[in-house]
Length: 320
Image 1 (tube, helix red, strand yellow):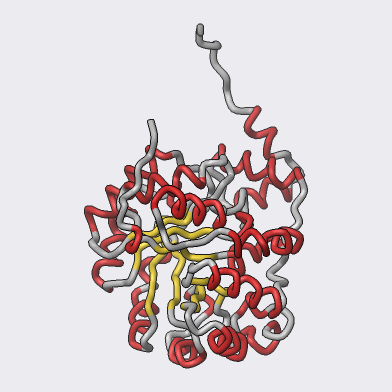
Image 2: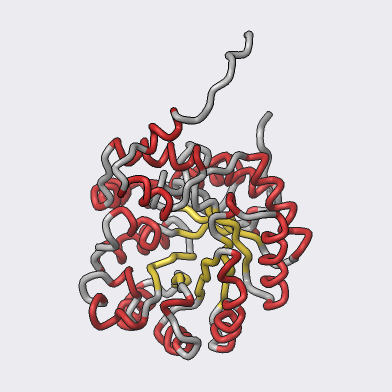
């Protein structure tokens, strides 16, 4: 059975996460030239929401020159904003790295959107940051991460927090790359019952389901899709930006274009070199629904992730 997507393409936005999520593949070592290349490609492809890094103001002095996307210092944001005025500069901020008073400087420095990742445990501390960022004039999103681990009541609680603060988008993030399409449909239905703010989806491709899961999210009412050039990102990678842009262009007459992204993809992929073993680890962590900390613990114990898959109990083979 095929997946159909609403024909109202003006309501669908793609968000490039190459520099932020792809940074997990190269220790966030993007140069400023790399960042400009990615943002320029997105501008040419009419993808005008670009997440250009993490916001970590306490690291601006130590890391701002060598790893600008790791901390997003003011001069980095100003440079990108001045070169690419059509692009909405977006950053991700973990409340542990930021004081509420920092958001005003972020807004003055060139960012327009700040995205807050949170597990259910962190939600009680998030309200102050949402309010401070909004007071500074920033658009904000609440991103419920590791959603495959989250109970329905916790999804509702996060959506209700998004509703109370009237955030600009409420995201469901499949951080572990473990969701299947039916689960995506259920999660978006649950979120839509608790909030009427626009919904977003951040897919990971550990099980090679990022594309179909993202189309399923659109069908379920999602307005924002995260994706990266070449699909670079932690775990199994992200939704391929060039793939989803090309799909929406050819199948849904969307405004996005593909060629500017494919032209820079070889450079992006070279900067994010990954071996085959890492790909297999991503498959295993997706199948087992393991988050980054759990995966690291297994590897630190010098155990094979794929061996954990094989260690699961098996039953009799069903007759065909």
